[in-house]
Length: 361
Image 1 (tube, rainbow, N blue to C red):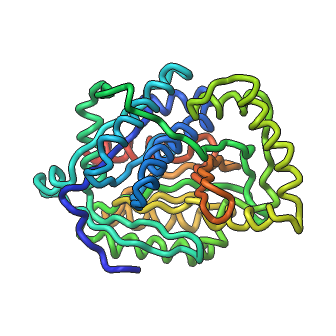
Image 2 (cartoon, rainbow, N blue to C red):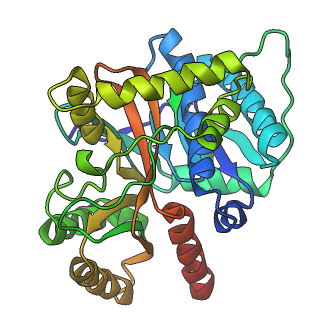
């Protein structure tokens, strides 16, 4: 792991968040919520790629947080405003979009440090310590305002590469459940040691990140029914015309052969497993884990002990599947897969966490 560095003052924290996501999830729209949140990351990544700039991003199930330099802020906010408008028009879902400068975070005595960690040969993730991102997120949510595009004729929304092609995914063999977990350190200065302890204990109970990955090749099944294709086209800001519909449908038919054993698609599926975004550290641990009920109970016993000692507070949700949206720039290691627990595990775990925080107050 590289040494943690302070994020430059002239960068910006961009936050997207679905208002009323719990109600949407309880109405059966978990996969749509996942896709909308993924879309907000994809819109920003497509802009950043034009400038050959890497930007850190953090998937949160019903929203996302991004760190962008000032040179990308205007274009990013305009694209996300268009994404917000499209989601409102197509699905009557309100997507909150806002930003705060990193300097604003520092001026309010909040810490924000970042490093990179390689989780496997293909996948590197950003790790943030400090409460700065969540401070900015709370500030944006508490001062929500409508955004308008300064020049609609110049603004554009590029969601190229956004896909929602996989059915709900059962746990791998020898697992019977998917756990979505959020862990907050109660003392900011102890985040590094607390997070290290929690991750090491998780490794001890469940095995390595690879071993506890809820996505496995045998359980992946393509879904190309009319409703799925229609949702993908609408969410990606494409017209629901016969040509676009047939493009996606034909890709599905070809895909069934592309992913056969000993085919080129087999390599893509192996990459997909490695590029699944199942661990996010944004000043809080966010994890999606597959395992057994016995393993979960061992982890809960450990977390309860830390919570009793007032070192952490956590939220957890258990389901029997995971859901996934994808960003595929091409099928040669240039893709990322946004994973959440079934029934929007992150949203439900966040609800548990918020209730605990309110009870403490």
